[in-house]
Image (cartoon, rainbow, N blue to C red; front, side):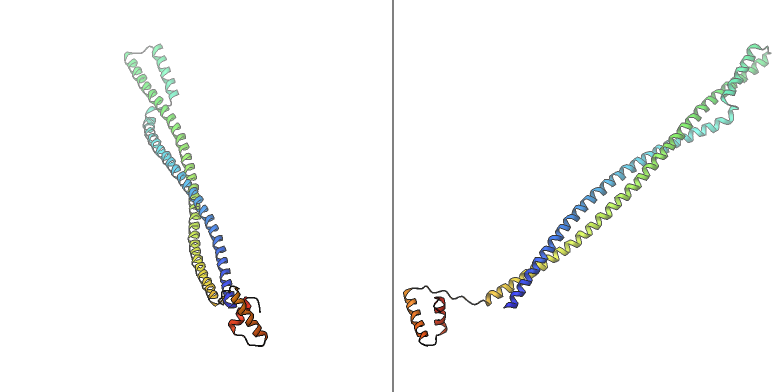
Length: 258
């Protein structure tokens, strides 16, 4: 019977230990769920930034593509004009100025005047081309600088995008590790629940067995006159040396006479 009591007490102690271990694991589980939720929010935020940076980078490259097209078109015009002008804008202007002066102050034949007028017309055309070429070169210079700025901008977006993508991956990995730990803890907690229930059932069985082994308590007789008289007779017989039966002995004990 004592062994059964010890077994029951040991089982109850194990139940308490399992309950305490479960409580600690549940707290750990709550912490992991908080971590997973936070890492998911950080990952999603990083992903939104990645998406925004991708759009900005695409916009930059689209602008680069458009400007490069314009740059190439102007460059083609410049290449076409530069070999047909025959000098710089300032030199051509000086040549025209000198030719006009000569035409106004000189005395020429009709044929020579016609030749001078034709040359001045050609110079004016060359000057117009040179002026256009100058404007195109200035535009090329502006576009070249704009392209440089756009490439720098696109590279900045690309660098930020890579960093944010790495951050997103880092938060995702941490989140997935947390989810795996949560899955493992869920299994352990379920096993503890099963184990605790088995231990409680076994402890209850031991307790029930103990109750069955406990001696049945006889109802205590009410000390009325008849019972008291009978008890006094039994006690007198006992004192006279008579051997008492078990029932007689129990009666005297219940009445406090033995």
